[in-house]
Image: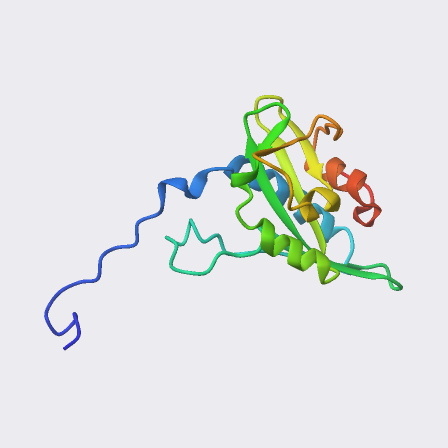
Length: 167
C-alpha cells in the first residue's frame, strides 16, 4: 500500500544548510561564463547539479561546471570546480572532496580547473592541473606561489589561453 493510499504526504524537500556555502564565488563564475559563452557561438557551458542543494539524493557531480569550446581547429571540453575560502593562501584538501574524480577526468584528457576565491582578499587563484593530479598533498594546498586575480575570468585566462580575453 503506498503512502498516498494511507493519506500520508511525503515529507517536504528541505534544502541543506550547506547548500549556500560558496554561493558568492559560484555566482561570480556563472556571470563570467555567461559572458564568455555569449561572445562566441562555439562556446557553451552547463551548471552541473549540486548534490548538497538537492538534499544529497543524487550522486555528486565531478565539478560545478562543464564547458565546451572550439576555435574551428582545436576543441576543448572540461570541468570547473569553484571553491571559496576565507584563508588568504591555503585550500583545505578536504574541501575538494571530488579530487579523485577530477584527477581521473584530467587523465582522460579533460581540461580541469579549480578556481579558488579567497573571500577575505576578494581575489581569485587557479589550481593548476599539476595541483589536481598530485595525490600526495597532505592537509592543504599552499597557494602562495599562485598569482592572485581580481576576477574568475582573469584567473582562467592566466591558467589557459583557451578562455580568450577576460571581461
